[in-house]
Amino acid sequence: MNKAIKCGKLFNSIDGSVSENQVVLVEGERIKAVVDEQGFCPEGYEVIDLSGKFVMPGLIDCHVHISEYGAPDTFRISATQLVGDGTLIALKNAQAQLMAGFTTLRNQGSPGFLDVSLKNAFNSGMFDGPRIVASGSCIGSTGGHADSHYSPYLKTVYDIIDGLVVDGPDQAMRAARYVIKYGADVVKFMATGGVTTMGTTVGAQQLTFEEMRAMCQVAEMYGVTSSTHAHGTGGIKTAVKAGVTSIEHGTMMDDECVELMVEKGTYLTPTIIAFKRMMERGEEEGIPPHAMEKAKKAGQYHQESFRKCLEAGVPIVFGTDSGSPCNPHGQQHDEFKFLCEMGMTPVQALTAATRTGAHLVRMWDDIGSVTAGKYADIIALDGNPLEHITDMAKNCFVMKGGKVYKNIG
Image (tube, rainbow, N blue to C red; front, side, top):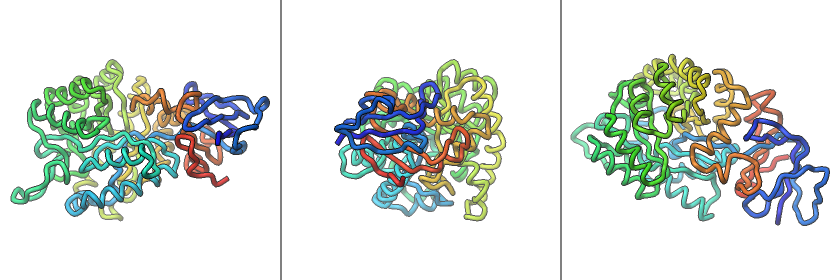
């Protein structure tokens, strides 16, 4: 049956305005129209009364690890977890995200292409879940953030346990083609070292310009996007020059970094909550000392880099690294608060998780605003996040593609 959603307040992600007493008409999966309540005739519609709520587009988290669940020692998990186990965990995580109001997730690395399988299962209607933008396996260099650090006498499965390991532009190009072949929507590579990986320096560049350019070129040719895990200044600059679509984390930047990102239109996914959660809970929950030390080092530069990007007009999207240590899925609403603490207005924070995210994943024609013709991905909140940003956690209604998954009144 067609649905009519009565909205007390309706957030417009296109211009940041809020309208009152609007009705969103939904026919099938998509929005038919948005009309004023005063002239609305309910005949032929099932009315959903959200007149006391703050209504907005479904949220987009542009950086999650869907098969991880916040375990403090990811190295141990990767060594023991079967791909089937990871897939079941991913299904549970995805459904938790949907119930928290995240109707679209951009996965940034999972073993065995399980994120592609999850995307296909949700798209076919086999299971309920959010829209998935999949990366498949990450790509990195020998000894880099995507590589294993097991004993050299143990043989690991190339692209199941860890990422794809490449050395040289030819191997990089082949790896990018490989992940796209099996359904990746975004080519993810590791430009620098990482916090959780043993034996890597967090800021050190780990791929050459030629290697990065080869992967970005393949993504461009195939019509998909690219992203890179990047903490250090050199790796960020090189990736931007190579044509990467988005920088993930981006903790250490100088002015030249920011200028390049503005010039190229490169997106930033800051994932502030990942560092915050490690600092708050890491030692107590048993995150290995090497990871805690690197997180502290990277985190001290993060706020200044973010401020520079915000002031310069770098497009910033909402992303949380959900699944990383001490950072479970469906519990990442504090990222909105952290974005505001680091300089965003509440309107900018909400826009990052709707309009800007939709542009990054190249789905703006279908999601990111409550607009006629788009999928009916709609959520509602108790409270007003433009007055109290922490109200983003007060989710009481979730619709994805015209189907109601949550309505607690």
